[in-house]
Image (cartoon, rainbow, N blue to C red; front, side, top):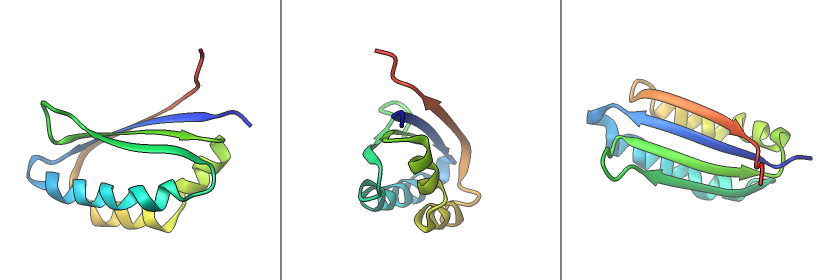
Amino acid sequence: MTKLTIVANIHADADKIDLVKSELLKLIPITRAEKGCINYDLHQDNENPAHFTFYENWESRELWQEHMGAPHLAAYMNATDGAVEEFTLSEMAHIE
């Protein structure tokens, strides 16, 4: 298995920042307890509070994909429907 790094950028609608932030925070303890999760760290941009970034490391892509299908992620998607302006996700490999 090859370790996988995920960088997920979430841009909340300007009037939905608090909602998106509270829903993102709910994901942290559940996800950190998942099999294969090495770290799952949420960041908020100092200049643009609507921009959040998750920096994640997983033991394998397969275990990350299990996370992506988890009920708590579906609940987040439902709770923030229409509140996220943009979402990008990068699957990355550590090269040094």
